Length: 105
Image (cartoon, rainbow, N blue to C red):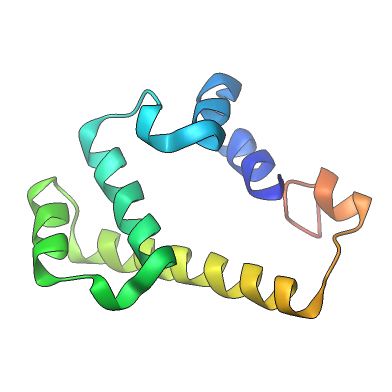
């Protein structure tokens, strides 16, 4: 779980990372964060179904256009990289796995 290891390094809360890995919908999150994760999930499942209403809900929860753009970039990038690696059968070596997803460690 490379992404989880990376997140664990960022938030310093192993319990929360575990909850997120299990099911973010049941994790101890505030409402805006949960909404943002739902948005990221929709990008992953079918980005063509994102509506103006989805964006308006994010804005109403306090996210700026810049925040939404950044979240969109991150979700889309992770999806791109994961799909590319899956399609090519890329296997991460142990050094990369242990670095939290960053080749430089």
